[in-house]
Image (cartoon, rainbow, N blue to C red; front, side, top):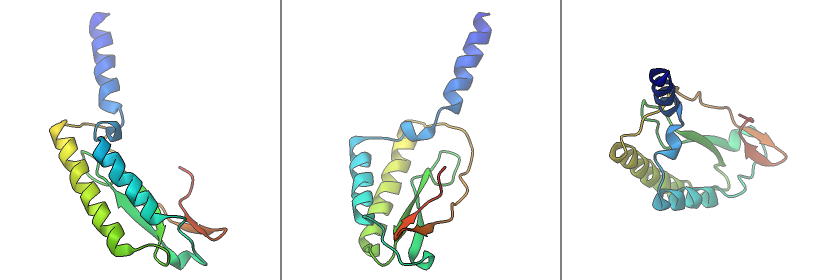
Length: 122
């Protein structure tokens, strides 16, 4: 019985989301700056919407996707903040020896709905 509980606990920890392991106040601040740079992501049609991978999972692939509008976002500033975020996120995962489920998120397709770029509900 004791061995079964240990195995169950180990499996639960291995399946926990990696996102919680790679956080810090600095990382959260950078993410908030990215969200602010994206702003309302205004669009008139789908062509103006872009999908943005953010962070990384321990096994590869982005930790999440955000959506932005190329007509209402300072792309240079956004790319700079995303690069800073990605480097810090990766460093934190290495320091914390983060582990998680090796599931690569498929890249979502953005949409322009009611004048705003959005991602489909997950």
